[in-house]
Each structure stands twice: as structure tokens, then as C-alpha cells.
Length: 246
Image (cartoon, rainbow, N blue to C red; front, side, top):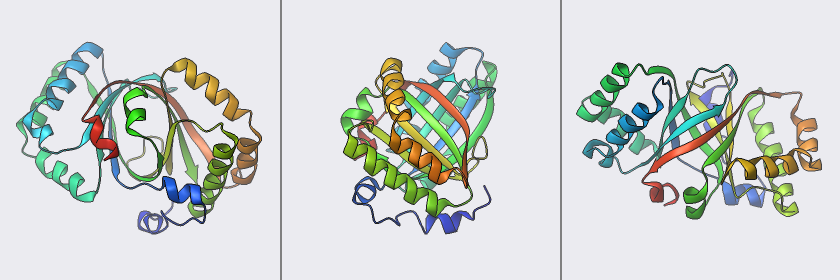
């Protein structure tokens, strides 16, 4: 990731595509990857934190994911927080330094043998999702993309999205985020798509991967971008899901 992040942020809403304007997004996403030797203990520990007054005071959505396929990455679970704006993110950062609930979360994780693997922050730039999608989407496919020409990649991505929406092969929910800090595999972009289950994911991705629109997109972007990692994860729980689309 050689691009200057402030420069990236100044370009986030640039597009002449009506579809891109419709799906433009704001907000932040903080992901904490961990390696757990006791999945049940991890689920219970994270759930206790999400039920705490400290977390509830933030007024944000959060979710816990289990990694199903992520190559050699040692991450078994990802704890993710979704902030509507920078102010809500700042509030969470400030609270974490003195929160008894956060301290208990970290101490209990250490006792259970859980190790921190990564911490990353992403900025939303494109997103298509409804409240119904938040409820039903449980499986997620992720493309981590490195690009040396972000504005051009975004224009080509918007063009592809418009094409597959017109063709009726776009998924119900998907999005793109800029890696602002961290980035597990050094990616510039975090691209995702949500599905109800593994079968739906396989069927819909097979159609998408075989499409001429995707082939044209790959041809137009391969000289300045590459996929550095692909992942599949399952959402184990979501807290305050209704806030995600408000």
C-alpha cells in the first residue's frame, strides 16, 4: 500500500456512475483478528463484552466471525466493530483505555489462550445492503486487493457493478472499503459480498466468476491491481444489527 491515505479519502466519492452514487457509503470498520484454541470460550467472552454497559454506551454495531477458509493466516475469529462516523470511532478509542469491560475481555482472552493476530481499520466507500440483508447474511466472501491506481480501480469497479446489476447477477449485498491502517495482508482495498449460506455463496459466485462483465473487469485492472488474499467467514453473532443501516 504505497498510496497516501489522505489522498485516497479525497477521492472516495468520485464517480459518474448512477449506481456508484446510489451505493456510495460512509463509516468505519475496525477488525480485530484472533487465534483461539477454545472457540466456545471465545464466543462466551466476546458475548459478555457486547452485553456490557460500556459497549452499549457506544451505540454501534458489532459482530463476531469464524474463519472458514483463509489460507495460511492463523486467524480463527474476527471481532468487528462498525462506526457510522469518525466521532463514534473516537468515542470507542477513548472508552477502551479505561473500560473495565474491555480489560476483562482482554484478560479473559489471555487466560483462554487466545492470541491477538491483527488489528485493522477500514473506511467504507461503496456498499449495498438493507436491514433485511443484515439479518439474513451469515456467510461472507472477501477479496483483499492491492492496487497502485486506486481512482482508476474504483472507476472500473463501479462500471462492473453497473453491468452486473443490469444483468441481474449482482448479489444482494456487497461493498468496498479502503484500508486506512493495519491491513492484514498489506491490501489497499477490502471487498466483500454477503450470502445466506455457503451453498448460495458458491452458486452466485460461480455465476459471477463466469460472467463476461467480470472477465472484462479483470482484463482492464490486471496491470495495476492484484488479489493478495481471499477468505470465507461465518457470522456467529451480531449485536445492534439494526443500527448498521440507520
